[in-house]
Length: 130
Image (tube, rainbow, N blue to C red; front, side):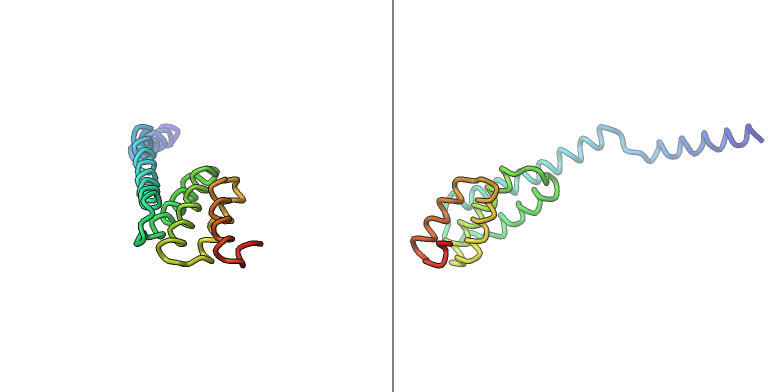
């Protein structure tokens, strides 16, 4: 009886190890996820850096979601994406309220560029001077 139980536990161990991912497979998945986040961040930075009048702030919002999901404690990237989204909302969509919201979120994380965005909004729209 002991031999049967020992044999079954050995078979179960082998089956479990056969389905388990190796460290190399986990590392590959992490690198892939990191690469995807970095690509999205680069897209957002490029669009916001060009100040395109037709730039899509949803690119930055997607980057924000990816950062918040994969790197919840990464405040610098998060605050930069908030600023970029704010810039795009202000310049391309002319949605100053949404831009204000993103600038405020970034300013609360300590981003000095967000304060500059808020100052510009304040000069152009008195309601932004809270």
